[in-house]
Image (cartoon, rainbow, N blue to C red):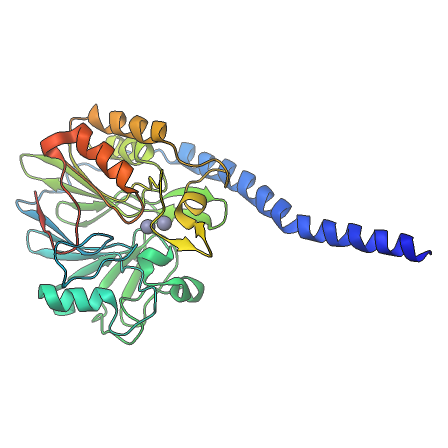
Length: 330
Ligand SMILES: [Zn+2]
Ligand SMILES: [Zn+2]
């Protein structure tokens, strides 16, 4: 074989092997999208019936992008303290980007006077770094509020995929499930993401007496349309509130990695070049608006300021800014 031929073969092989991972990713993406749609179509649940109700509900963001005061720390992650009558729920565990101990979550908790002794149960919306306490945790299949040991007192932790914590009692949620009176997980809804892969995400529905259902959402990967459709499948009560992440990084991304606006590429459930648009945001707003909710609060951890402003404009005095340390009382 001539040297030229060998070089040509080598360069073809190099080209081919460079192209294979993207081709495999594309294949995985297409198959995963089909699978997610199949799971969605097959997930026909009956009404949950009477899950009870709560008289008092408040949501105190412990981690998110914006803070209500300078002594609190913001990051592109989620952790909310939900008080539903006498039950206190920790919803997600933040990002802890620099893997610190104590983490920003723990530091904010201390400043806000919240202790793990006060918490009854944990809910993890989905297994992404900004919700389970960092990338290392995703790799290890765990969720953790800090980089060092924190005693979670073996409290129940409702998770949508098999992830654990050594001091909690993980319970995998495969379908809609009542957690405590008035509070239910609506069960995971999967989405295939191009880089991050198969992503089942669960949202909470909390029935507030005399008002209706308040939805609490982590990243919103399944789309708000599907999350609300699931709520309407399970419950007859009106939609009272929509609180949390809906993933609308239209004009900017909160996390930029190696110069790449990560959220615009990684969390959309579309091809990497097919970004979320202003039209998508308007579509979601009108979908929510038609249900006439009384409280809407969009998490800034995975939505840009343009999207926040669009929601604020649309919902007017029913819109509440979501900030660490500012309790949302329903
Ligand atoms: Zn997120
Ligand atoms: Zn996510």
